[in-house]
Length: 266
Image 1: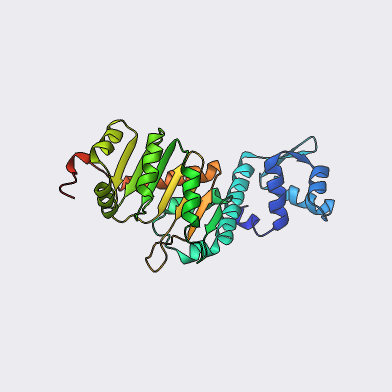
Image 2: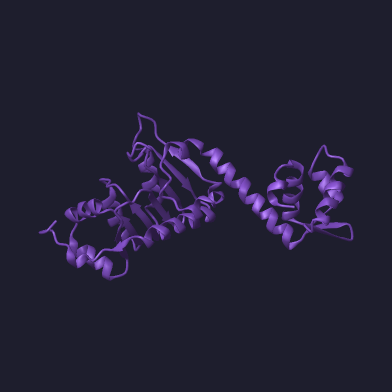
């Protein structure tokens, strides 16, 4: 019995998800799943036993290893569908081609996320909330496909507070940064292993991951960066997902050799 066939029955899914939490007797299942006859539940439990998804010991039903794997797949699928539906406008309006397939298959990690969105009268609200959330971070992984005026100040404050930062930027963003900062000061942060900078020319997602938050901004289908909407999450699963995305982007990035830059040749 495949997990796809199990998805066709809401009752079967409820029973499996209940048993995933803990082993149960029939009475426990009956009280948890209301408006369902004992005989109906028993018929499904027998079917699960026959398919080696559950075992019965002294009237207690428990998932087998196979049943646990099948149910975990079902839960992951249902959570992923929930993320797609919950943030439908976010996915529909933006380019997602920059997100690797393996992470798209794990969207369930973002089930506790929220959308931060600004209306036309308060366009800075998304950025301000982002600044408020990261200003006391101890580590930060970020990507910057576009330059923001507050970028230099925020990075400087974080570094002065001991935050360790890794950034992936495009060459135009990098050149803008170098035109506004003291290169020697930047070099000291890099040599002190507090700052690492990489470049990637086809960079698209604006990603920030700290020990506490995960934030994702995307480009609109038109090719313009959308500064009015971010996906924001605080769960360990979402943070791990964001770290995975940063790691994937890092694979095709190049480490910046700061000795090649000076204010005279920018």
